[in-house]
Image (tube, rainbow, N blue to C red):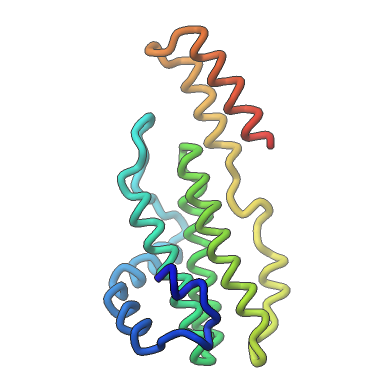
Length: 178
């Protein structure tokens, strides 16, 4: 999939891409349903463990990006826009989890999805999506809540000594501010 994402939509091996998207079809349908909900509770992350599902999120993001490119190659810009919309909503929902790592994943999904927008707007018969893009939330993924939760948990974690806590605070806050 990553190789196909690096090539222009009109250079995709359409039969191979279609077969790959069909294999991922059930997962893509579930993501499409999830992002249409007013609230979607993606699997929670329990710090300090890394989320077990990060690989799956990445696979879904790549699959959505590929679906958008495939639809563009077929001239089906409405379906391509739907895949892009799904990717952006998933990025926002996943990214606004309770940990900074979930925020980072959301930002990455959003960035990958927005790369497809670059191809979309260059299509000769692509509809104008300027207004839809203008209405995207700014920022798409708000990390403030996750960083605040992380900072609060640092202060209350009995496993951390004062020095460790101060060192971590000195790194997390400036990194977030940047």
